[in-house]
Length: 187
Image 1 (spheres, one colour):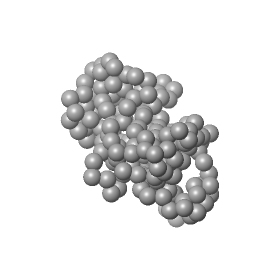
Image 2 (tube, rainbow, N blue to C red; image 1 turned 45 degrees about the vertical axis):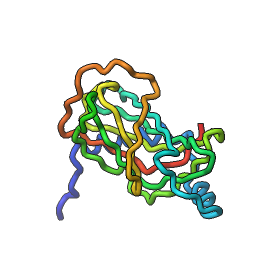
Image 3 (cartoon, one colour; image 1 turned 60 degrees about the vertical axis):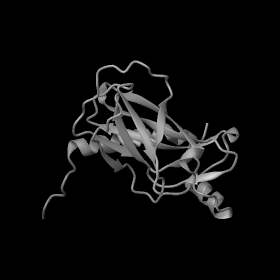
Image 4 (spheres, one colour; image 1 turned 135 degrees about the horizontal axis):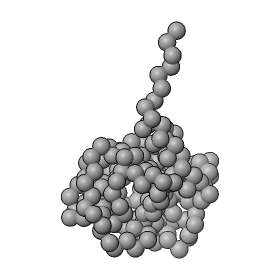
């Protein structure tokens, strides 16, 4: 009988870090059942890029600067409710705005549920966890853009910590970014 094939150490680390990223969102996450019941009671139109603003917070885990984790948060700036669904596509750009090649993977295999975003005064938002593997760029030396399926444009993601020092230019090869499906959160 063949021994089961073990995943490579890098994949195990990435999955562990993905779990940490989800843990960062967990205290704020609404349950999937709550999200489904809201979506089923009232059909809410999909958010458009002009309705959404984003913010990003990354943390270095332990002593491993090559594996930051955090989240991108989505806020509804319009006067009407809208919804987001699925795993957003995250674009990574260097300080001059050129795209950096990064592999993107979904961090969880679960079925996506619509995250309903009320107008910003409600205090509710949505979020997707971000976990990096083999990443060596400091925050500020790169920027992120976010795009959901069906959008014709991306939305820039702003750093929550007000990072202004770009540091060394970002030149990464072989990095993987694990992104979770969007979830409704309260803060």
